[in-house]
Length: 323
Image (cartoon, helix red, strand yellow):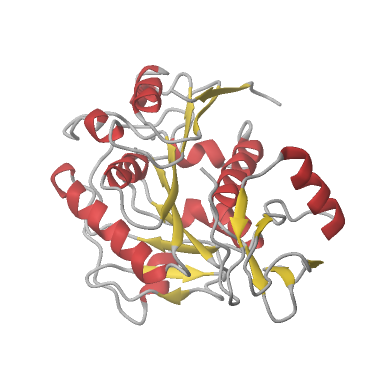
């Protein structure tokens, strides 16, 4: 790789667009949601709007794509454009996760509490099933931490790309980070001036209490969505780590009690004769990484001893005990 990835595991990110990101600057207020919300969000992106549909949220332009038992909500940087998220959205949808995008009403510092409320409102209206995750870049990286600090129901994990502890008029979110008990992945560049290099990244990471709590760093100045730019240093690797973290936190297999089989969003099945019986026994979660045959998947899970889940009675998303 062109740069070295540094990964710190602990039990114990505003605008983009170049190697030297500038400080956050408020973007214009966004129009209210309408049947044309997809066009509003994607009009400046070189992407096809096919597959996206409007998510009805009062006063917010929001849209979603994909299907599956869990949802990932993507939170913009201060530029308030969704375009930089679209490659990551495609990768998440390929893993059978639903993806939601939206635009803040405003990115001004004094509107940050509103951004938190809107993010959670989009998650509630867009999500499939009970579980969802939040991924944010720069300003969005701050907001996902602030949202997690409220401990909303159904939040399975957060991923913050260059979320700043404080910058310019934006308040210090370290007290919020101390309240976070959700699993967290914090991604940053070691020389990012907006996070004062590694300093703010480490401070926020060390304050959060979720398990796992991961700090993933790379060399250089990249900030926010530049970290996952596939054409940049380590962009593809960063994307892969983020997608893997999201998939590991969210259920993506169903148990069909009628046929006594497990089914993934890709249509794979495996024999589950000992699972999903009328007595609802505990059974291993064999679909965390759905690559290769079902037998290979089962062997892989046995080898890494994933936690045990309970089979549901119906064709509902699997309820997991993964922490």
